Amino acid sequence: MDRRTEEDRGLVERMRAGDEGAFGILLNRYQRPVINFLYRMLGSAEDAHDAAQEVFVRVYRGANRFAYRTARDRFSTWLFQVARNVAIDHLRRRRPEEPLDSASPADLARAVAPGTPATDAAAREIGDRIAAAVAELPEDQRTALVLAEYHDLPNGEIANVMRCSVKSVESRLYRAKRFLRKQLRHLLES
Amino acid sequence: MNRHAGPPDEMKLKRVLREWRGIEPNADFAARVWHRIEAEPAPWRWWPDFVFGLRAALESRTAYAAAAVIVALLWAATLAAPRGPGRGRPPAFAALHGQTLTGAYAGLLMGGNL
Image (tube, rainbow over all chains, first blue to last red; front, top):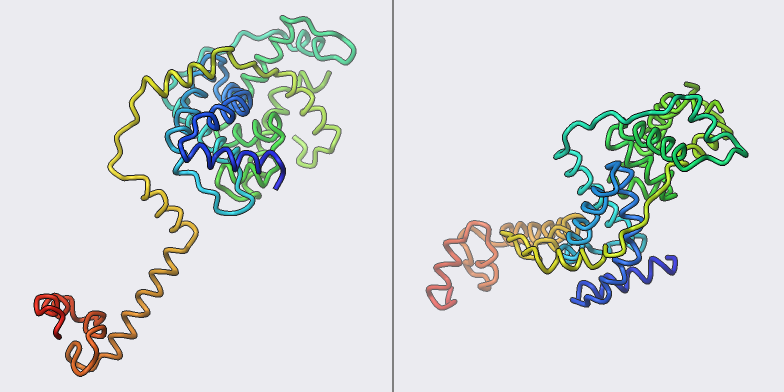
């Protein structure tokens, strides 16, 4: 068990015993990853902050539901499980989104060309284009992709978060990347 | 798309995906969480927290093992008890006898003198 996991374990035990300071430490430690996970799942900073608040409220109230059953169990796995559930709830409630404005493929390709500093506006456009492509993925593929590419979670850990087999994770990642290669081909060909 | 996309393809996709930058938490994020915890009443539940302990036990199969042991004991006691409950046996046999919820109740009524 690494040091962070061990520290988390101690903090969770303290939190379950009613120590608000321990919850405060976990909140500060994990707010950034949780907000960014939700930002990429929901595509909106405002929604991500709102959903992340809900995640931490659920964690605070549901601390007793989390039990370390094996030495490999991690607080972060449970946290991402809760975050995923909250993201699914938000996605269900959401109305269909307006299509994003898009720059021309040539502009986007120029903006990510090596050695060419992308302007802020172009970088935002690229971000929007990627966000739009990721938003088209089914929820399960999106979750697997976000955890793998933006949180560097190994497939085994993603399988724990998604409560599925490693093979399923690999399959979801493969399909997600195949779709994104097609959607983002103008950026990839630069 | 090529199913066997090689490492350069993987790296290229990874590099492009990283162009979608993350965001920083709002400065008052933690304060808002605390405010929400204090402002919103905890949802009322039909079940108390120990139910979650029970669920954990079920998931870890401890409860299944315990249930199997109890069933095995009851079954053994049923085999051991000859015909009528507790006949010629210590009261524990009657209490454990499979036929005798009524027998055990009657035993209790009689002050345990089966």
